[in-house]
Length: 195
Image (cartoon, rainbow, N blue to C red; front, side, top):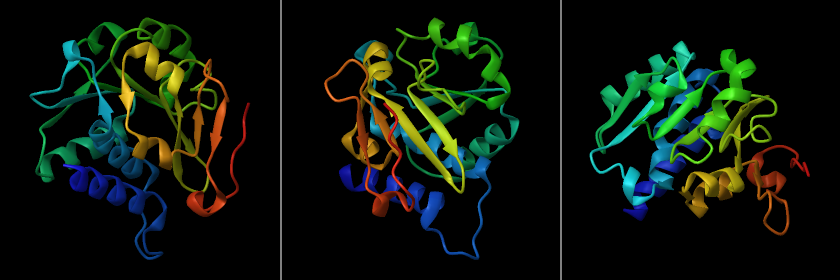
C-alpha cells in the first residue's frame, strides 16, 4: 500500500512541476489530479471512513469538476465519485470538498460551518488557510498547495507526513513553531515564510 501511495503522489507531483516542457497541463487539470490523490494521504475518523470509496464535492469550479470526472472514469483503484455541491448542507457525506475561487466571497460562512466536520476542505483563495481551509491551492508559475494542521486537527483528520513534505507551507497554528518551510530545491522556487 505504501508503494501505491508513493506512486500516486509522485505522479501528481510530476504533473505539478516536473513534467517535460513539451507536456503542458492546465491549472484545472493539476488541481483535479491533486484532489484525486489527496484522499490517499488522509485518515478520516471511524464515523467518516471511506470504506466504499471517496466522495469529492466540488463547489462552483466547473472546469475542475470536469477534469475530476474524467480522472475517475479512466483510473482504476479505489472508487472515487464526484458530486456537485451548491451549498454547505449538500456537503453531508462528502470526504473532500473543493471550493472554487468563485466562492471566495462566501468562505467566511462556508468554512466555519465545516470547522468540526470530518471533511478535507480545499480552497484556492489568497487567504484560504487563514480563513479555515485545511488545504489551499496557490497558483503562481505552477500549482502548489499549503496546509493548516490546526484546521485538520479540528476536523478530526490525520494528514500523512508524505503529503506534508510536499506542501509549499505547513501552518501549525497553535502548535509550537508556526511554520515549516521547504527548501528551494524541493519547491523549485524560493521558500515561502509566512508567520
